[in-house]
Image 1: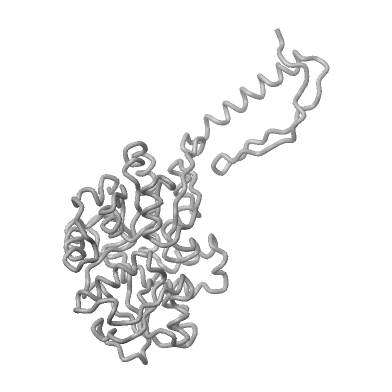
Image 2: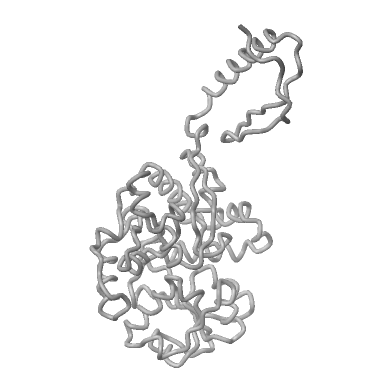
Length: 359
């Protein structure tokens, strides 16, 4: 028996399947239900045959949200934005959307609480929050060196971290893990936050304070160096890694997501590391691609290229395997934070990370 008396009246719609589109349009009315049913069976057969030609990963992209600690337009997040823009996530069969938290510590808490499956934090973030019962691990690190760079005005008379005493230094947020890296840097030379004036200035103010002279320097990241230089201010970049071996950015995942969706996490990590590798191989080309995907930077390509070059030389090198967590560095960092009172108790180091997704 033929089913259905007439075609539906809904307007046509488009469903995005990778790079191809299958369009469902309003069907014309037919007086004969049998004729309509036959045509529908024929159309279904054609559609099924065409779908067999599409890669399975392109058909069933699983949706996932990645939580950034700061605006996702920053070059700091180049690996993620390149992976999205160049289709690496889509090739892996995942559909990634973005959200923004209030700094790395906030992201760690949100991910640990299950409000987002993955998020971007500096890789020592779990050291800070795991002691308070936040169940999060680092599953990949974007580089073998420290993320935070000490950037100071050339006219500030600062040659080394000990010279920060009595100075005003800007940070993005007291909830961001670059702030904790600054505390570690200070402790390594016998200083505390009480020995200087630390200002929480936000993602724009952190570099604007340096550019306008409100701060002698900043606990910054490579993204914030070009804007200061563009304002005509000469700066000195003091790589903090040689004074205080801390960590680069990482991908944080909750224990529950690691347990329930390890394949999804593995796909995300692999795609994101492809974006990082693109920057390492050719910072200039990667910057051009980044600007295509993040048009806010159009006309300021030079700043992105400068930032990517800083990442490629100051942050990304130093890993045996791309994305690998350096367990010894992570463990020593936790010991240091405990000794200096930055944390109150240690967590078992194996609860802070996993390298199971690193090839």
